Length: 529
Image (cartoon, rainbow, N blue to C red; front, side):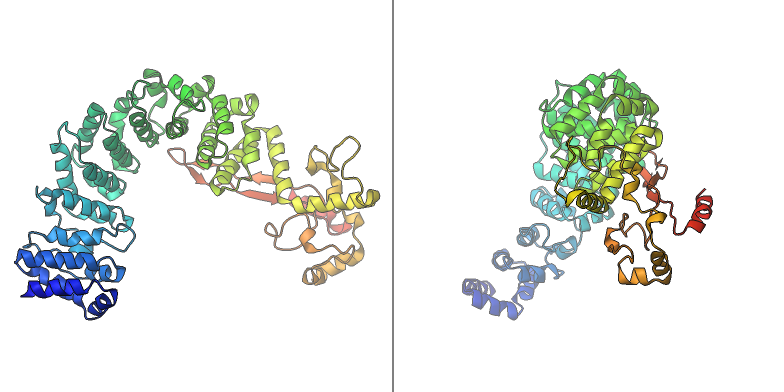
């Protein structure tokens, strides 16, 4: 009788208004409660009804917050959960909505395994609940399924679930317990399994004990990097090696033993391979450049010009640009490669051009690299200093140029006869015309400045110039200052963590010499010294 009634209600629910009335009467909770019944025909009708109702998000949420969607005694408990998973990730679905992550025993049930893995895959796509797998026995069961496959091809759903779980550090630690990593790696290398290698690559990205386990397998991974291997498989091996950011790993010996330098250099040629593979090569070069001897070996092989050529070809790809500049950042820490980059290539000029890129990450790594170059090379340091001055004080420079053009003839000539800009191409910091001098400032200016009227009004007394046109932008100073001498830029010394990461960001400080009255000129100079 109950089955017939439900069939009638199911047909009536074809009308959306009638279905809404049923929802208002809490039909979802009633249907979920009926899943405790033993009659399979009744259960099939209930599941069909729930599946229809789950089309609407509100009904799905009602199912989610009900505790009994999975009933252990029901042979179709997984089928009752299937409609909920069809909404996919990002809809608020989580493990607790289907009885909790602790109920994963269906993974080992032959009849329900595939559907169970699919449901778990949906859950694993949500980062908020991915870590909960580590607190259950699900991961050991999944590893058993992987090992039981032998040399047969693994189900896509199973390996996809494992790839997602390996991206979480807690799950990775559980996966690598015992000798599981060694077994996984042997299987991947023997069968050239790209998806399994992708899972191993995800495991290698986690710091701590998990990453240290890969130290024993560097040779096995390096041996796979060859033109004879499948590009997708090689790409995963390259990515795994690139994650091993150990400064004392001995990369120079690895590169020599497996003759990897010619392969890496050849793959840097634009169009020599898929962009994804070339990008992994660049990232690996950045990793191995942590070693001084390895960086020198790469510089002698001509990889730096190859990187510049690749930078020109991929200048529209932010990821390529960022990774290539990061390689230069790593190399300028070593004297041998720093000398090659600064004296034998135009890499600093390219980095200066990228210093104002719209991508914040590119600007950051460019600034850090240029700061190190400026510390060790006086000539480039001056060029970098000048370019930063031009950029930060562009508004002031434009005003000065316009002022001199007006004085020269009402702004009729924008350039001199030789075609040169009024500012010239020389060192802009050595042009006194760009700065106020104390001799040109009237006594009224000092009186207004010390009384505070100048700052309050926002205009200079003599001459009347808006505060916005003072040489330095107010984000670098918090009160009005009149520079007498060119600005000098000072950069903080870089420190690096193990693995080459930046520990302390470089800071740009501005040092100026000021002169507010003739009597205080000598005193300020003494204070600056």
